Amino acid sequence: MFQEEVKEIGGLRLHVIPTKKYKTNTLVLKMKAPLCEQDVTMRAMIPYVLQSATERHPSMGALRTYLDELYGATLQVDLAKKGEHHIITIRMDIANEKFLGGTSPLLRDALTLLSDMLFRPLTEQGGFSVSIVEQEKRALKQKIQSLFDDKMRYAQHRLIEEMYKGSPYALDVHGKLQNVDPIDAKRLYEHYEYMLKHDEIDLYIVGDVMLADVEHDVAERFPLAARPSRSTSPSSLPKRTHVQEVVEKQDVKQGKLHLGYRTNITYNDVDYDALQVWNGIFGGFAHSKLFIHVREKASLAYYAASRIESHQGMMMVMAGIEPSNYNRALEIIHAQAEAMRTGQFSDEEIIQTKAVIRNQLLETVDTARGMIEISYHNVMATRQRPLDEWLEGIEKVTREDIVRIGEKIELDTIYFLTEKDGEKQ
Image (cartoon, rainbow, N blue to C red; front, side, top):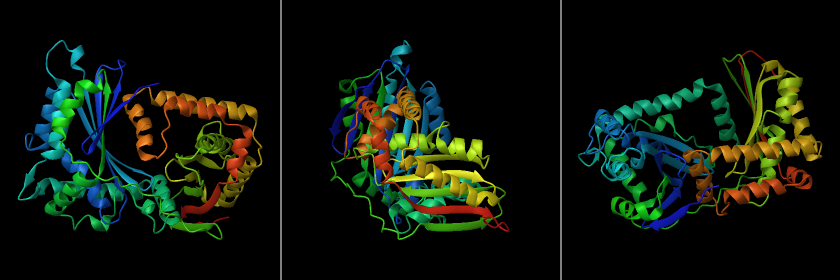
């Protein structure tokens, strides 16, 4: 387990997780805002622009050279969608100076660099650097277009797009291709200034360090004004009178069958633990019903699995199948969901699933990044769920709980990506 110290410093929430496990310190900055079609494409560009150059290190080469000087520190950025929120992540790993025998204040240097990226990015004439913005526009277009080439990711995206049509959750984390070209360096910088004033910003520091060691350095380097909380309740989907079926034809050899279910349960709910066990028995792991019945026994799928979106109340089933096996695969998936609803699973399946979930959680918190991700669930949610409470909750789930929550899970949308001249059979 891990302990976490949290302190509000102006408009920043500082989380320090002290641990002597690692010889490095990990810094992770997260910026969260509601998903919105008007700005999601600009937000998708911003972390890549920020990591390209600062006033003090005015090119990517100069910035990388400086990271090397910090004993090979690493810097990465990332985008994610959690529920109806867009999350930007900036991550640095840096050696802990305690193990280097020198007196170089590496953690302070890393905080300074992170502060420079945030408050002193490379700018010109009231905007970001034009050449960097143009370069990142090209890169973003490639990322958006690459989704079309990865058919599994594409099918996942299309399922969500159809299931959540008109809702913020339908938006892709990288934004829209047609919205890239109109972005210019000045407009992007103006939006970034807006983000610094309004985003919910969390800074995590994990390593052999205490809150008291870093509180002053963080307060000095991150002068963010307090901001009103922007808590948003998820938009509600209208009830469907029947399951929506979407078939899309492309030049593909392998069909992608993706099903979207409304679980009507999120991380905030008391039933979340039972949902995790339900999903684990149904399709979350290699011992699950979907894997065994669709892939192993019927040999119908190249892959068959399910996963839940903790903050959206959605479960997705994914199967790669021969186009001709569409109806048979659906039949077996429906049969496994029905078996779950009627309690047709063994005590051994429950025990095995709980053990796998437990091991997965413990493996996650064995890494600095994993600890941060587990902790950040509690930032995203209105309910606080410390890890020991989470593990205990999983252990307490009963057969009756699993059957009961099965009644809440409703199939909403079936999406099938299939070959052009192939017909469903």
